[in-house]
Length: 195
Image 1 (cartoon, rainbow, N blue to C red):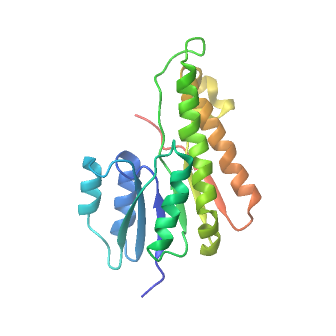
Image 2: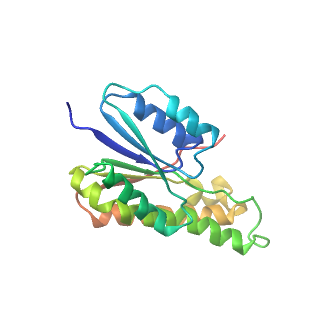
């Protein structure tokens, strides 16, 4: 059997994370590790029932990105399942607080967004780092936003979503730090757009 390509995707219970997990799972010789918060969510049933490519398999783990210890516990589960490397980590899980002005933003929402969208990504990166390194060609992909780019604040009107945009600006920095600090790792932030 060909070497399994192992992909970990956070936020696999719904939305973009769910779709990415299904796409990778449909390909041959892929192990998809999907992180979810709620086993009973409709997207989880859909993911479990989705077609699998030859030799592909799904492993679900719990990661609540607001809990820094969850990523480490999930990686322990991954290792216990016999997975010895991770080729691609897609840090997709995020929250998006309400759109409000900087003058009226709820500071608790700023902290919550930062904790999930930035600190959660650091916790995930730290937990997965040894298994990414074992891949020999590890990739750390963060789902960010152009609205988190300071130079694009005016064109994207990012000033109207301070909690979200501050956290995504931090995520962009985290991604670049991972890339610059590890010559063996490819780390990129992607902007999936909105609509």
